[in-house]
Length: 202
Image (cartoon, rainbow, N blue to C red; front, side, top):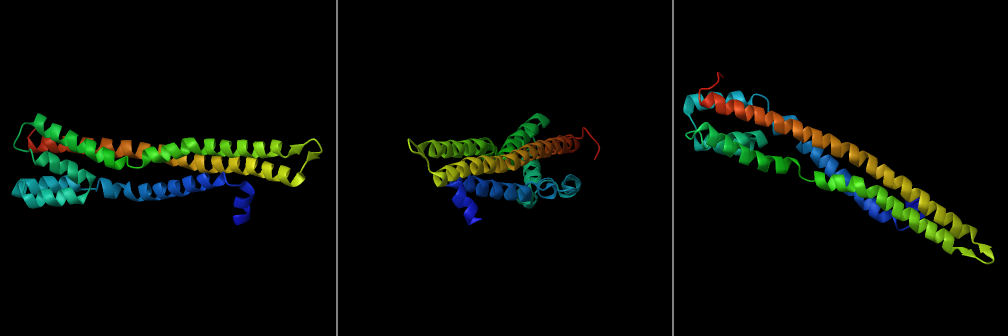
């Protein structure tokens, strides 16, 4: 591994740093965007049942805030349960925007890495080409310097693509997953509002 890094030259270091950051973001988002963690199954039914039995209590709101992102949305709505459905929906929308921001955390960084990794690889290619042309003299080229320049050019291009392709795949995957989770939360929150205001059967 060290021999490969040595052959790729110093331009490989920004790419290695980008790859480590991308791996960390991918691992963290895979863990944080699990559906049971974001939108636990059966939470809506539990909330409705508890509301019908005891009404809205501070203990219930505190538990929902600490439960999950969906719980935070429910809690924001239930805090305004005595208001009109419009005000309740507005509170839910505000909480939803905060939850959406949290779910999208680090995705911009991952998308940026996916975009700049090929450019960093191209930069390494340019450095390698400069080294190749710099090795040329009126007496001819130095084969060792020439080979090193070619190594820098090719390794950096390849590694830039190796970092960029998975980063872009996971970025698109996470974007789609966040959109799906937000849609599900919105549907469940609307259902909650309609049920507590008697516009819909539980």
